[in-house]
Length: 275
Image 1 (cartoon, rainbow, N blue to C red):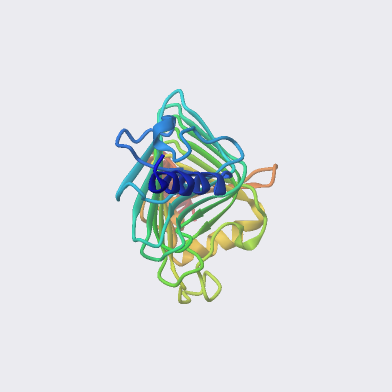
Image 2 (cartoon, one colour; image 1 turned 45 degrees about the horizontal axis):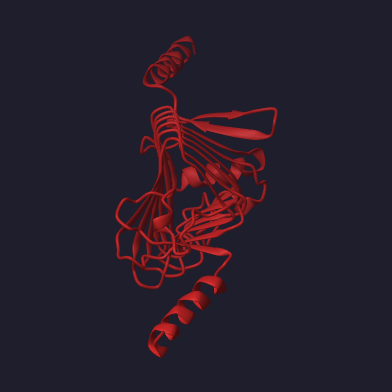
């Protein structure tokens, strides 16, 4: 064996063994999470692995978790780079993603774009936080009957100018359980509800019959976000929401069906006439 070839093999061995707890995605072109060829170590990640989408095979890169795929991870970074890459993670069909730690998008650099789409009947369970646009730009979208559950949600944080836009539509449900005031949103300098300046650009819009379910302790904070136009329903304010406090400590922010809105408006008209 030549000395040059031996050195190349040695360097590659050290690279792989040195990041044994991290799984680096290499998009070979079929964009499949469950294809061993798409991972540096040649194996699909396990429940203890830190998943890094780094754009090493070019940008934009795409990773798909589709029907029949039950993906697991310890931590997920969608867009982990300083090279202005764009990464998109799609969970669709009946695919599932179970993460014991956090899922973080647009990590490390403010020019990085990390997008995530959860659609159809897909399910994502996050033991830690869902962090959208930690340092860069991110669009997080839920459609269909998709379900995402996380301890908490941080949207647009750490770096001035980070942009996190979230869209919930269809019958999708996003549930968080943290009772910390910052366990729902981040990104503001002044208290929400005062029209204060924002350090970064967080926004969420809920449409159709989608639902945001958060710990009741965060209700007033969420109402402040609505007042600031950072949390909207069909692009509008408080009048477009149905807000319900449940006995299990959760507050439901839901968009009513058009017929329900009509009935609410009709009821209000009757009340005005009676008065």
